[in-house]
Amino acid sequence: MDLSPRHEVENPGELRRKVHRNRRWAVLAATVVLVAAAAFITAQGLRNATLFFRNVDEAVEQRPELGDRRFRIQGRVIPSTVRSESGVTTFQIIHDCVVASVRHTADPPELFASPWIPVVLEGEWISGQAQTAAGIDTHYFQSDRMLVKHTNEYASVNEQRVSEKLPRGFLNDCPFEVPAAES
Image (tube, rainbow, N blue to C red; front, top):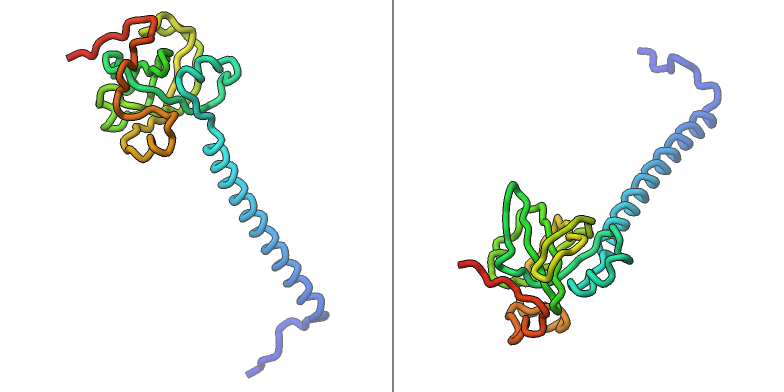
């Protein structure tokens, strides 16, 4: 049995360098892929963490500065304004007597049905005429993500945020009439 190589290797050192060079390129390519994946994941996390969070009154006041950027808005849902049709839920939210009209395009959570429920919505301002309890508005809030507040821990940690109970006299200072909840 002949075990001699079929082809004579002219320069074994050159072959070794080729193998190491190819291995180096493979390691470099894998490193680039891993760094790119880590950068993408970090960018997505930072994007979500840097979304602005505003109460309705702040968001309406800062509408020109916010422009078409995504941010989070919070307020209480006015129960008599909730309508659902063709997968779109429309309603109005209020905070400090400022009302915003909302078009929510995802399914709302089950707790959304509670009257005067505090919500945090993620989306952006869209130019378009909207009728609210406070009158005609030039924009509405287009939302695709809704968080419903349901624990007391949130209120104790963030006292300036809305709480679950409707405060006594909540609507007394509003210069408009808020429609009563439908039975």
